[in-house]
Length: 252
Image 1 (cartoon, rainbow, N blue to C red):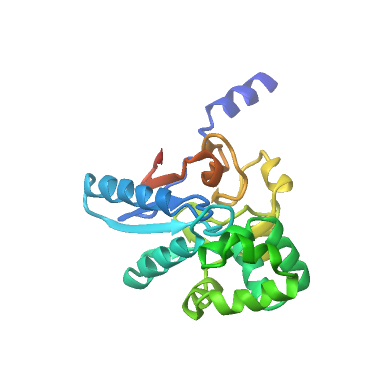
Image 2 (image 1 turned 120 degrees about the vertical axis):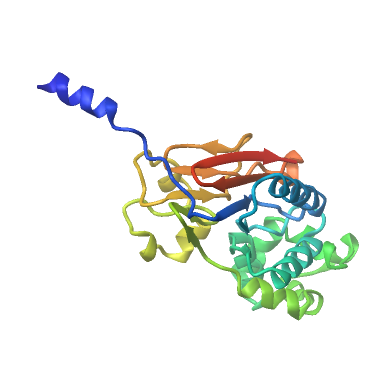
């Protein structure tokens, strides 16, 4: 009897997630201020889409547009314009956008963390010189952020999506808490979670597509797909194309 059960289990196929019909999705990993790589990946997306049969295209940026790389301001401007021109361009809020917005509001802990995780480069992309930045205290960082980050950028970042569900896929920045329904996930978890999600090995409610955690190559596992390849330091920005049951990874 045990042998029969084992053989039955072997014949049960793995879950194959499917994108909703008539839709092609391109998900883009963490950009972190690399406008040069963003422009290149968008060219790849345009070329790939043009070479395939006509369907409705969605582009989903998984968050962490800013910090660490040299042109956060340019990335925010580029993506905000894309989203304004095309309602099928979406962007999720990453933990770095959350920290920037809290720093702009004057949250002391967020200001300190912002300065540790790449805020210097973000402020420089908005016109602060390296010499000026070194002279600022935290109160002055708060004051300067409010002066240099355009209201349009603040509005765009404040209204980023938290999660998207399309077909058998859930798109989030960091991951989900296993054992909790997708609809009940906490925002602090979807923007920040690591080990409880990354160490999980069992199936989830949806195939989760995420960034946040850097890997040398995109990770395609039975329950999650991670596409943060550390663009700011690796010079590789990664995207994922999903159509039907097809999954295609490409990088700059």
